[in-house]
Amino acid sequence: MSDDAEQEADDGEADGAADEGGKEAAGVSDEEDENGKGTAGGEDETETAAASASISPEKLADYDYLIQNFYTVDSSTTISSAQLNASELLQIDCSVAEGGGEEPQILIYHTHASEGYSDSTEGDYSTTVVGVGEELAGILRDTYGYTVLHDTGVYDSDRNRAYSVAKPYIEQILAEHPSIEVVIDLHRDGVSSDTRLVTEQDGVSVAQVMFFNGLSRTTSLGDISYLENPYITENLAFSLQMKLAAEELYPGFSRKIYLKGYRYNMHLMPKSLLVEVGAQTNTLEEAMNAMGPLAAVLDRVLSGE
Image 1 (cartoon, rainbow, N blue to C red):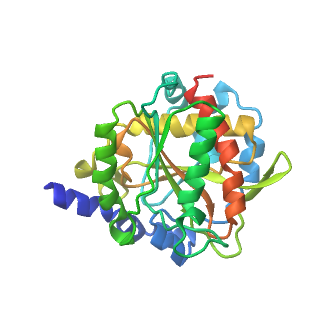
Image 2 (cartoon, helix red, strand yellow):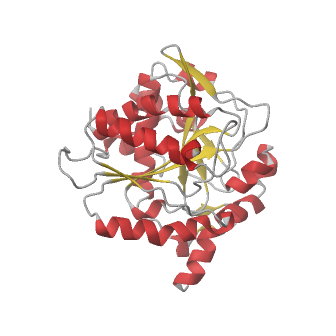
């Protein structure tokens, strides 16, 4: 398949997954359809947090326990116990080299820069996920000493082609900065209008976050050869380690990891993380408040503690 054809297929990820019936099964809203990664808004995360309060290696080794308590698997895809092996995923080193230099270690960008919150100002990207990304970048720099590059490019003028549009720009950034070890694509989820993804942490109301993985596999097609991702295992390790660290540091802050078909440009780096920060029903302040806990969780994983 040609590069152009691959990009078209890659960009058609959302529509292809929707055709599998995932959206109807989850009962998602129109906004989730636009988002391309619509999830079952309103899912009860309380049980997950309670079940995660005390996690033993034996529990994590139980595939059924793992999948029920830590994951939501979209109907567009499938995953097996061989691929989702917690003991193997937790042995993968997700740490980064110590910083202190001028070259960036972490790249933050936004495939959907226009995703805003209930009180965002139209056309003002400082009030969308771009502003939230700048908050995260600042905390990672100032509090934890990481060197962060925040790309504020807008790739979703045509939302149906956002992943294809973003891909060459992100590839160019990675080529120009080979020091980058971590790539974070920061999004905002779409849920039903009566769903509020909020938790209280240290007396502050914060938007819940969700880690997301694409598996380059659909239930109808199987593994998608033209959307190869050699880093699926590493991607899964990163999100699982982030989820477990979040449950330890901030119970209830992280929703279940969402697994879906296609790859969402996560093939560009082993330590690629796609994060949904709240939803359109959250306020910008709640999303901003989530960046402190998210930065702390990232540091826990990236420092190898």
